[in-house]
Amino acid sequence: MGTLIDINGLRKSYNEKAVLKGINLTVNKGEIIAIIGASGSGKSTLVRCIANLEQYQNGSITINGKKNSDYKSLNGILGMVFQNYNLFPHYTVLENITKPLQAVMKQSITDAEKKAKILLERVRLIDYKNQYPSTLSGGQKQRLAIARTLAMDPKIVIFDEPTSSLDPELAHEVFSTINELALEGQTMLIVTHQINAISHFATRVLFLNNGIIEEDGTCDEIFCNTANENLSSFLKMVEFDDLY
Image (cartoon, rainbow, N blue to C red):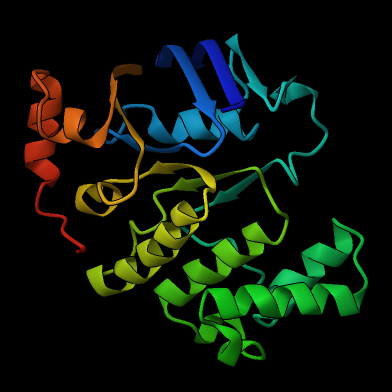
């Protein structure tokens, strides 16, 4: 497996508060890594640093063999799906995919529409192609956000709490789509509290606590066989989030 992400000694502080305290992490092609931990443990800050959305004070992040700070744009390498969708409200469902393809990837309208329709079929939204995001459910909006991210053909997809604002039924829709990506071999980092959902497809689980990776292992090691008291306490708080 080729290394897609290599993080060494990553440290990030907000004013005087240390949020990441020396993160070391390697992500290989095809891995599906779930990142869990209590609120404030540094999960979202970590993935935002990887995506070059946050500046960090110390350490290094290499993506696909190049420092992430050296990229003018991570399009085509890394895509990010946020919990609040970040859709364009003034564009139709179809245009939310075609417009970025035209602007960023310089595709013709014909090629962009062809690709967009394939992706909308894939996330089961083709019947909504001429509607606007305001008419969609939360689960549909998130699936559209996933389709728009996939349109850029990223090597890595990051999901930052993609179902935190959704009820269980809609969250299940989103995780079904993520599971399909896992079966296709898409490299992914997923920040989530939905333990039972990720246990179906995650190849690794990271437990962040107080700004460090306290545990790193398989689903069985993390969810069934841990001796870490902090992790055990955390799992007791979230064990009832069952989507399957």
